[in-house]
Image 1 (cartoon, rainbow, N blue to C red):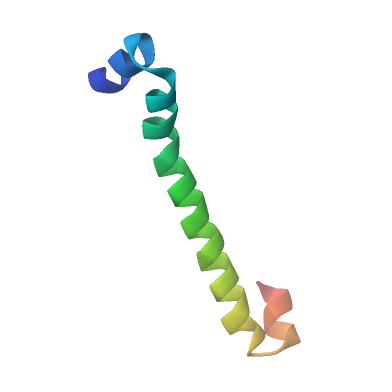
Image 2: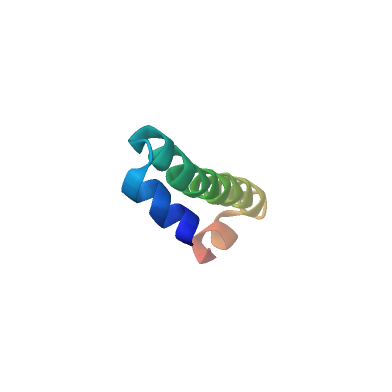
Length: 53
């Protein structure tokens, strides 16, 4: 925790944004891909199953 605070206080702003934002971006992309793949497989079951999700 202290390392992140020190990075935000006195570190390079680009490095801080990259090191703090990159995990969030990767997580959001992972969730998006998961939802896309899940919707594809559920759509194979039919329209009723797709409407239930």
